[in-house]
Length: 374
Image (cartoon, rainbow, N blue to C red; front, side, top):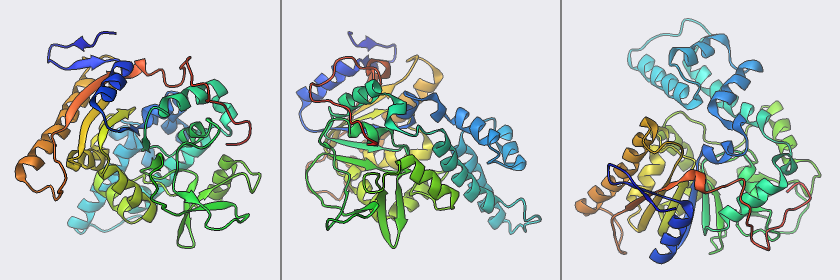
């Protein structure tokens, strides 16, 4: 497909063209994934569907449901942001709580937990519930990249990364000695292998005994999602970043050894970064800032879903160019703090529907599906 020249001069290429372009440009190729990645295989991961599921299961009290109605949204992060603002205003004006049943701080924490619990309820129990063909297609897609950064909590990417026989992506978890423990510990080996990073945590990660651990199935015989749901029933929550605004998310990341490790890796990638399934929303401004401030990252390829001329996509395009503008300002200020080559950020756009993420028909010969849990 020939790139489409739009009235504003912005070109929309196919994914295949974008990949060829990065090959010509040279350097490594990295991938960042947003919620659109998960929605592609299961629409239950849409915020609207998650909200309806939370209502049906009674996870949200009536006065919290009224907040969603008031702000005309089904987006958990938007309501969390509003609650956070409300807490600040209450503190600023020294307002007193009048009811133990209606406390914004309590509702903020409860809503974060409700989001995680709802995702776990709609999550497929097994890789086979996703489908062999879909996982193979996804594996073929991610294997085109040198490192993967995901903002999603679910296990779809993790399952897909394991469908190529030998695990091609390191995740930093393992065992210092050969044991039969029902978990692996974050070791941060620092190897140069291809890596998979959960920037906002994941359902199968948790903190215990001062360690960041990953749940495993092979020494327990218990399915991962079953372990996750059992833990949630016991009010033991996974390591996930579910705050409603970017500053709070960044503080959560900085407080975790694993998450801050992933973050440092993102801040230092070189070559080209592809963003798929993400709207570049202000709730993840910390991610956009990390890209802008990384003056060794040369190229940003942003996936565009749907009508290129829609109001939503015009906003997406504007925010993408704002990242390049911030990079330009950083370079002009001379305060990058880096001694290696500093360069502007080139912005490109590709048509997300040309990725065929969960339906690719041509697969690498070595791409095989595992028959067990993972």
